[in-house]
Amino acid sequence: MAHPLLPKEEVLNRLTKAFRQHGKEGTTITILEAATGMKRNSLYHLFPGGKDEMASAVFDHAAGIMGKHVLRPLQATGDPKSRLIEMCEELHQFYSQGRESCLIAALSLGDPGQVIQQQIKLGVTAWIDMLARVIREAGIPAEAAEERARDAVIAIQGALVVSRALGSEEPFKQLMTRLPDALTRKP
Image (cartoon, rainbow, N blue to C red; front, side, top):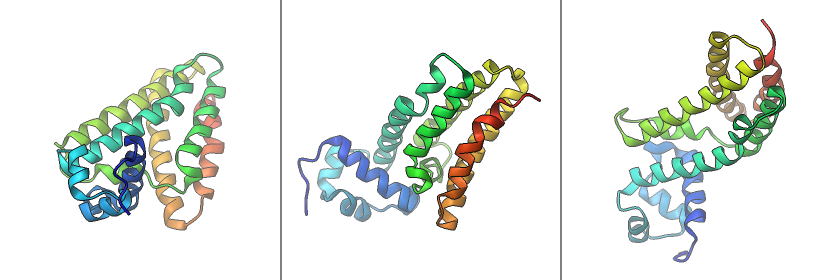
């Protein structure tokens, strides 16, 4: 069934689901047509750059949601550990308790010179930098804070992969529960 009047946000939500399920390289225009209920011409009308533009728009859309919810506590003021707890709660929601695939992994395969690769790099770098700042505010020395922030993002992405591989939300849930303490623990 075609959905010619879908709001763009709904189109992006449906495209996001398709890219999460199949990855950028595995997602075909046929899959995107089925996911959105739109014909190829309609998709190309919205995204003249084709699948690459759709992937880029999906990343921007997800980054906006992540910024509004997940990164917001990191940009706020107040107790660092409480802000990290809130970030983890928001991540838990953002990734549907660990049931959703990591969008970074799904979109990052391919030519490293692509626009999407640069978007991902900037987004991940900004997230790490924000995390490191909050960890420093918790009294952790700068070098250790930066290392912990990088390790946290690696662990988050890895927990998503492991949760999906095991068909269990538990690995991601456990990490979200333990992460604030681990990030703020004094050396």
